Amino acid sequence: MASTLLRGKTALVTGSTSGIGLGMARSLAAEGANILFNGFGDAAEIAQLQADTAREFGVQTAYHNADMSKAPEIEALFAFAADKFGGLDVVVNNAGIQHVANVEDFPVEKWDSIIAINLTSAFHTSRLALPFMRKQNWGRIINLASAHGLVGSAGKSAYVAAKHGLVGLTKVTALETAQTGVTANAICPGFVLTPLVQKQVDARALKDGLSNDEAKKALLADKQPSGEFVTPEELGALAVFLCSDAAKQVRGVAWNMDGGWVAQ
Ligand code: NAD
Image 1 (cartoon, rainbow, N blue to C red):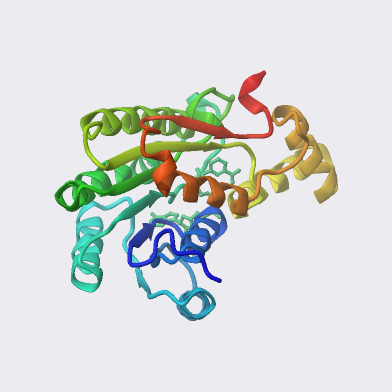
Image 2: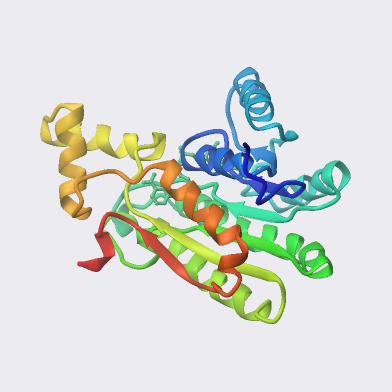
């Protein structure tokens, strides 16, 4: 029988047309949550994702194409959610991009986009979600940070700055809601094999003359002691736990699921 932990609740997962966000959306839908998808991609494929999720899990789905780097579009997304679902019970701030270059070579417009999409968007969704969550005295804000929210890596200045910032935002949001039924937490994955990481695998293969498989192993060997990728399903299971009653005193954590990356 389908699980009902989140039956009747609605979750927004930003950047859920691909990768981790899609895994999160499916995990929450499997618990009965209606899903508001967001992210870029082919319109027909997104419509298919919505239809598949609705049919597989017996939930309602919707999609909004807000560019998460733009405050007015995020406001439009929330107006759409209020109209369609009455409000958002769970917000997963997942949309994110990466760019790798040393600080002195880092393109200024890339810096601005990474900070806007990976950090500032979560400020906007949180400020817009909290009034409804506080009113009903229940809500879950889950910020997809990264092992790079806890430690740095050369070449990833904007990403590391944004993810450390997101961990900071999570702590403050958790403190401001500490005496309510709303919680805010961050999840800090290590490497997950998504399009975002495949680009880094491709760059490594090109740089060192490696096959795709060799480049994956090399990338993991640098950082992730388990030598295995984390999966979107494993991260989805952690998000489901954070939504459960058992997690109601889990507040302001930056929970790494990273094959041992930050234990080193
Ligand atoms: P991905 O590239 O597969 O997916 C990114 C999603 O964000 C897509 O749906 C894309 O359309 C969407 N997106 C990008 N820019 C957007 C914008 N301006 N507005 C709205 N949506 C936008 O990436 P992923 O690996 O699944 O990453 C998801 C999140 O997890 C990111 O925040 C990333 O930093 C974080 N993360 C990923 C890894 C990893 O190893 N893949 C590790 C740690 C953290």
